[in-house]
Length: 140
Ligand SMILES: Nc1ncnc2c1ncn2[C@@H]1O[C@H](COP(=O)(O)OP(=O)(O)OP(=O)(O)O)[C@@H](O)[C@H]1O
Ligand SMILES: [Mg+2]
Image (tube, rainbow, N blue to C red; front, side, top):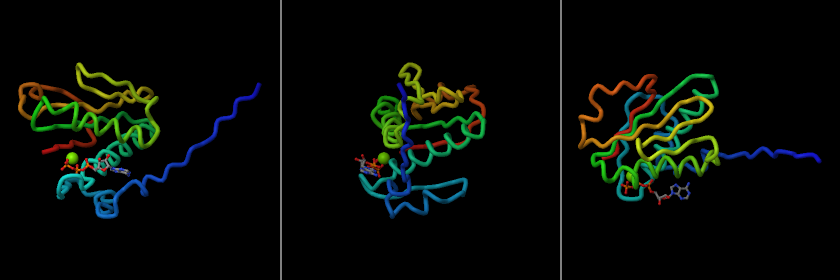
């Protein structure tokens, strides 16, 4: 029996709304995304963060991303769910391990992870030593 694996080609640029093309391609260190409800801010940012983490992982580097939402109770339905959405869009579901307590999404092969925190519980962030942080997303 022969098993052939077909390569899937995903054009991420086609998933990015034209309005946020600049946000998508910029290398600038600080980005503020403005726009009304459902204007693709979170979608674009989650795709960007996932791509950044994956690129580092492919280079053999560990790269962590911290995601903060102003309210802890909203974490799961907002930033956590948004990163899951991006992972699904890029067909990378099997590459990650999902944990809710602690809230974390780990890239299995590289050990890189998305960490999630509520801005209303700064004590959880205090003295928290996460290394190799490549990006921080503060979702208001
Ligand atoms: N490439 C895509 N194809 C289809 N649907 C998409 C795509 N990108 C985003 N969406 C959908 O469009 C909507 C965009 O919402 P998103 O959460 O990105 O907006 P937002 O600007 O962060 O809004 P809010 O201010 O409410 O947080 C979501 O429902 C998302 O599932
Ligand atoms: Mg949003």
